[in-house]
Length: 376
Image 1 (tube, rainbow, N blue to C red):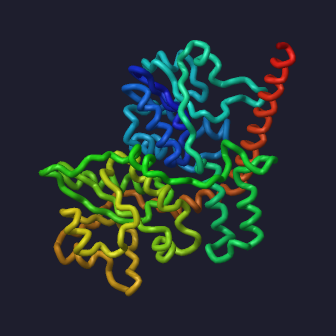
Image 2 (image 1 turned 90 degrees about the horizontal axis):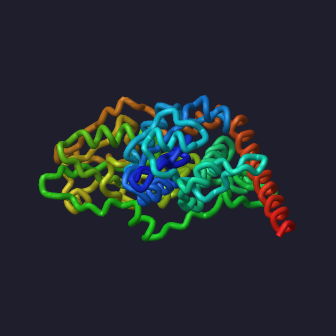
Image 3 (image 1 turned 180 degrees about the horizontal axis):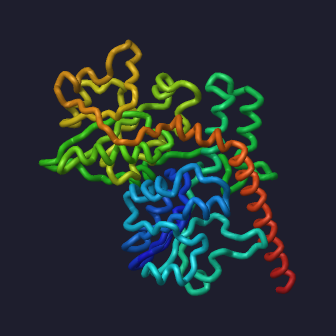
């Protein structure tokens, strides 16, 4: 079926389902939602909102609608994207895209007055729910980035840092179950769910790329798509550097996402076949021979020298299998952090508004439940 989903506000069903969403910062939590939605049906349609629609309901998006459409298309469980999807999913929307049902996360979906935004599709039995991924939310990631302006790995006890760390994603009660900054716990099961499990086949071109791939974004997607196009039958392996290594060459308080979060983000991309978790910084003989690498690619960003000052790509260059890829997208993680900082006040206001709305909705829900109890 086709299904519709959310966040991406996506669509999906038992033929076909739809998921609808703004998918502003597309992170592995969204990908996990889409993975679950796809498993409920055969064809996943994801409706993505326009910039205007998001600004009206939530505040300024970090990425443009064009960037968001492309990011969502790059997630391997997505079959189709509906651009400019309506903010509220109605039966009319489901029928228009031949979707049997819509999918939403199990987080709260009430308006401020306690009205369920999915009331219509629920009543008609065309609603399914998937589990929210613990430990990540856009609010939390924005919070981590806002810390970069004042905090550094070395001054975690800085009062500004503490204040922000304490404020982000927490309601008046100190911790919100929806936007709460909670610890992401990696399990082998989660990696298996995201991994393709496909081995390289004879005739495949094995391409290796390495990096931080922090805050997996449209710049990364454009680069990986360009890498994927380097061969007729590409098998792309991404080597991810451990957090400490990333901090060595990037500085500040990078990486924003830890190695576990970055692993899932990269695995969700349709251009990637395999990930090396904690890859060596130097692309050496052992690695190239072990994976039988045919081609090593790097984007046009700076290549930082290894700890001993050596070129990490010396071996692939010597073998004549090193290639610099022009992805025509110079967007970096730094640029994204910059976008967030420029919008800083708007984002902080947005996060606070979201918390207030959430608490009001919980309150309305409690009142409604109390009312039902008193009538019983």
